[in-house]
Length: 90
Length: 403
Image (cartoon, rainbow over all chains, first blue to last red; front, side, top):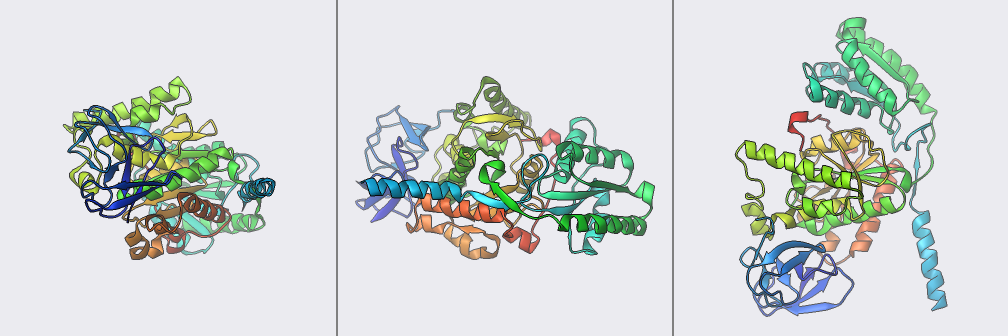
């Protein structure tokens, strides 16, 4: 079982606390809710996993704030990083 | 259900009752976590004399500095303000200002008296007293009298809400944004909710998230100042041909999992907690309001803790990932890490080890309780790793390089 931390109840991503393999179950802690999600692909330690479907051009939220905009549709359990989100400052 | 309610009420009462520490009450200003007899160097040329004086007695804390001579305008104001506010700090019971000549030494003593009108402050200068041996002898005589006076002081019960806490992050890595910064922020919120003040800073590290931070401003003036100090930092970098927004996050940040500058900066500002920002202060300025305060100060660790201490922080929580041994001589500096390797590799430099959060052994709430407990103990006199090892340093930023 992999582990991840969600920093705020509004977040649609969580940060994984160890390397997670595709197909592995991930237990998401941090906001008091019991959430489990299956990793759709491998996610390295310290990187983010999508907790919900994030349509293209929608906000990616961490710490309860917008950390970027999705550049393509992101499915739950997918790796969320520079390949599918971009800063709202650029 | 009724019994459960009663017990949770009891627990809440215990929680608030335990947020006290033993400190030194001052006639004005906040309580002291220490009662130092500080020997303050006016500028770099006085450091050797201060070191010599402090080597000859066990009851002195030397505060050496960088620069000081031939400064002008805001650089000079900032130097005098910071050194004066360190002398007139609530953790200092009495101070001896040591300098080359009376004018600049007097300016520092004046700033100290303004901050703490109750404090006995002596000034000794080479031009008035004489060379190295004469000035050392004079300072030792003064120290004898002041130290006896200080030794009569006793700690008394104080509330957490009476303090100013500084929060800083240095040697950051992935664990900083995940563990040590958020847990530091939780303790910061506890200090605010108890009626205290929290100062966090590092202008360069809020770049990219300033629009999000500005939302926390309590009023329009504070909002404008947050945005203005970030703009100044961006403009200065641009004048040197550096695009801070475009060059962040860096390649190693991306490898570590940070996807945008907002995400990087949001992780850094977590150390300031979540409460409204009531004021922005410059390097070493004392806030006028109680609450969460942003200090427009550089992010180098020593410069930053110098600014936080000069702004009146009785203690500093220093959140670190890969580790940094340094602390402040006047404001005890609590090193906290969530990085399992740093907690072992640099155990002698770490005050609070929160690797248990990464390992899934303790919750964020438990981690915050542990850090708050350590803060209260340190405020009450427990020595920090940097105090024990003498890993303390002071440096005053140049005003032109603020941020």
